[in-house]
Length: 259
Image (tube, rainbow, N blue to C red):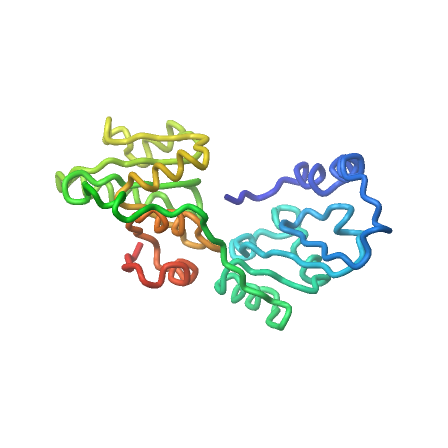
């Protein structure tokens, strides 16, 4: 989830307060670390990343702020360009992200390495398909934030259509607590007992929900990867996702649904 960064937050996360805390907590003697690879996994430079010698690598997760037009201090990825200029290796989590890197920064060279995410937990197929509720009362799962490019309102409209057609289903949602405004906007009160929300779900609960659900829905307009799609597929759960390049890259063998 991304939100535009305020000037105050930038001061705290990129400014002297954060740098002092890093200096106190790091205690690194750079003279003994020459020749090492320094790998930055986000875009808030640490003292080691600024001053350390040796090869430098950076992982680019997405270019969503650039695509949304967020610039200067309001871009939560404000340090990305400096990392890209200095990096000897650029890891992209998907081919779609690598393509975005070329579009926005004109970078397309041998430094780029596409390394996809993966999952470590896989369901046994005979456990998953012992009984399926897909015909009678499917469990529909949604995970994550809901506003902006996450596009949750598309799912909400689809659920309203199902209700109007008197079709039975159960909606499971995971993420931040819904505000009263959201509940009214998405008409979730109409679902009554057929809606259950989970906040602060840990990895075990999340895997359980992926396993027990019949359908996982991801409606994003843009993403750098789409980890929940892999997590759902690893648990044998059907996926309905928006037809954007990165989702087709992740699950090109699944059925396509336009949202």
